[in-house]
Image 1 (cartoon, helix red, strand yellow):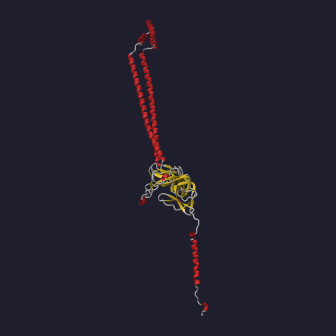
Image 2: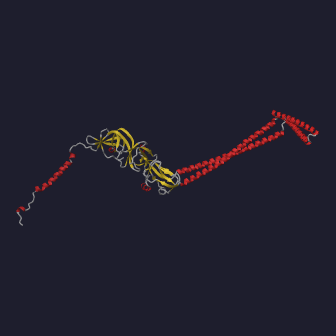
Image 3: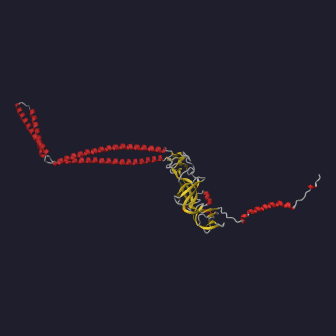
Length: 496
């Protein structure tokens, strides 16, 4: 193949080789000049990262992290030993007065029935004995009354004997004497008449002797009545002595009857006291057994979740398990009122007081904060690492810093406030009205303790000005030395 002259290679010119390199160099130089124009050309200062000093109410707060717990937690302890018959399930929502624990009541029921039966038998025996004693006492009192009457009669007879005859006795004795004398005269006349008839043969000797005997007997009666009439005014010491002896015997008999009444009354009182003492002990025993029977049933003192406790040796409480007196079996947190438990270090706890307002934000909550107030501040602090496990404490040692437990009660309740949920708590320590407020991030703290704030100047430079801090929160600070509306340059906050 032949080659034409026009196809022979010819070298390029010098100008043709420089032009492709010159175009990129010009573009690079133009880009660099455009980039460096801010350094060489005059311009206004850029203070875009600034904030205006505001005059407003400053709320001084302290923020801590805590954990939601029930405000009140009821613990159920056994009041006697026994066997669990029923127990509420873990996590069950118990209503107020719902039965959550029941011990086997059979032994207490049997003991109570036996005690009640024994008390009834004792009461029946006492009633029967009391009625018998009362009957004997009434009979003894009746005897005393009869012996009193006998004594009164015997005493009256003795008094009559000692006093002598009364006018009535005198009249009666005289009339008896005269009547017997008249009767003797009549019998004598009958005897004389019979004697005359016997002499004439009209009466027998037997009739005559009978009349003579009747007359003689009547004569003796007249003599007796005459002697009685004569002795009427003479007190017979023998009769007085005999009657006095009868009176003394009546007194002795009466006193013996009274002593018997006193003995019966003392015995009845002794039996009553003994029975009442025994009855009181029986009633106390029955009351104790009834109380023990009541203590076999335990009700929820409030509405809440049932949290069974573990026994000291590891097993869980369940039906059939034995429990002893004073064992904690269940815990029922009251979910109607909640609190947040947090800790505050010893350097800041003095700034907190009871009833301080607080805002609570549970973890993951995006709604309005819950409101509450400080309800408890512990009097004694503890080491910050005190609640660590023993293995952890062996490695970490102590924190050498005291913390105090603070409790914040919530004013309202919500389903989002769950037990053990972490939350942020802002406690309002105080308010400053009409204060100058600047961002806390703008504060520059010096080693000598002075606090500076960079103020944006008109010449484009930030001028640091010394100020005093009245109060500060996590984001803001109330200061003196800055005018309202001045622009504060935001810089990194220096550590203490």
